[in-house]
Length: 191
Image (cartoon, rainbow, N blue to C red; front, side, top):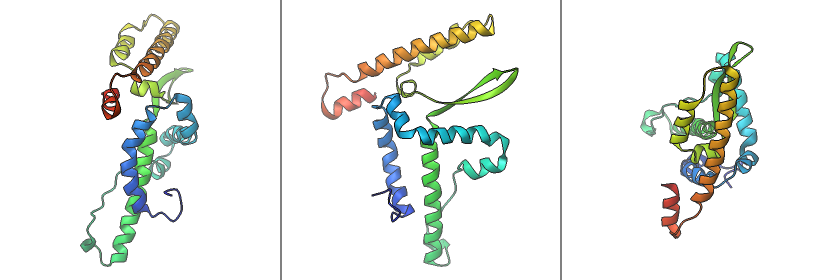
């Protein structure tokens, strides 16, 4: 129903606020392939936006949303119609901003040196890295990557990341098991 053209921006905005937290809980149960099936087009567009934005300030200003102020008080407007129009524009902008930020959390950026130039590389972050990667594992990688040569550093980093990814997939599988039932089980899985 919310995907129909007849739904107004205010109604969509009110539903989006509620759905955002629920969506994160549901996404935690998806595999990386399932996330790709659901959001690959949006994530690819976001990667393109992040790639092009540094080259054009006008493009970045038009595409990357910013929080805007809106005082929800009809007495600030000359007519009710003007108030409804501004509220509708605000809700449209907020739906776009919340949607952008929702997808943005799945795209990471790293700096790499290619042909002697520092470049930004944007990529889809695996769900297992978002929800199940332990801080101790991240810290271990940072502390133990050898810096003797760029080739050795790259190979060791990739090997360590693969090991941590396997660890996070195991943690994800283990998190599905619990001796608790019902709502207490879901709470235990989240905490």
